[in-house]
Amino acid sequence: MRKDKVLVLYDEDEEYASLMGEYLLGSKGLPWKIAVCTTENDLGKVFGNRSASILMTSERSYRKELNRIDTDKIVILNEGNLKNKMPGSEGDVVNGRFSVIDKYQPAEDTLREILEIYMKDRNDDDPGESTDIKPGARLIGVFSPVRRCYQTTFSVLMGRLLLDRGKVLYLSFEFCEGCEELIQQEGVKNLSDLMYFIKSPPSVFSLRFKSMVRSLEGLDYIPAAISGTDIAEVSEEEWKTFLRRICTLEDYSYVILDLSESVRGIFGILRQCDRIYTLTRNDKVAKRKMESYEQVLEMYEYSDVRKKSIRCNPPYVSRVPAFSGNILSGELVDYIRKQIGVI
Image (cartoon, rainbow, N blue to C red):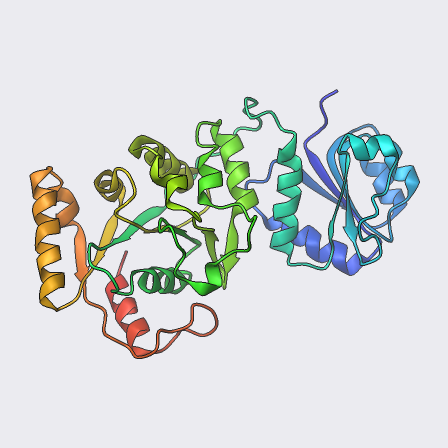
């Protein structure tokens, strides 16, 4: 029997249940309805004549009787005593019905793990729930043929400044992440893992995206690919499909692309952008590279890319601002704020 698309949070700790329930209810685009219970009586009412996709309960609230509840997954919120011990019967453990995650971690990490658990056994050919199309995000490209011109710094700081205007996603197409705060531990899923699902139905792709997205001071991002070979074979059309889905299916006002010339179809991707920031320097080598770049755009009939590009020459600073913490002042920040203008 197909389970109702409901996630039930059951925790006798009313404060935690209230805060986590509020976070889940405020998260858009989730594949389930959310129900929050703090007593066994409430739980009984929720499961009276229905089933659910996931039951999420705390270690202290878990009872063996909960195993009889009609639900696909039971997720235990570990409060520090379970360690590697898995509750439930041996059969439940073997078939993957039970999972244990840390209760005392950021709410966004808890949601990401829940989504990964939900998607683990999901059939990617199943379109699932239809996903509402939202007003398209504005796509901002940052690219330069000139090296060492603060491209990643410019992109990330611009993303943080734009948070005052709406929700922002930052995507790095560099092969080696240049922002220390964005470097992920080994084993964390990244952009190349997400692109593996680009041919999946839009609703499935959207859930995969939500399970991978992370946040830095409110700026959402997908960890960059570790190796260049991971994304070098992605076609221009696949990138366009990816960007179209991100801009129309997810709830962003702005999507910032920190682009690399190694990406296939770079000019076609730039053509999709609403605005392009082309960073440069004043030295002779930089000027020559910019001239060659603009000549190539004309040669291959991408003059429209050149016309909507804003050439920027960021001021040299002895110390690059931190990507986290307070970024409201400083010469480079002031310059970026001025360049943003009205997007």
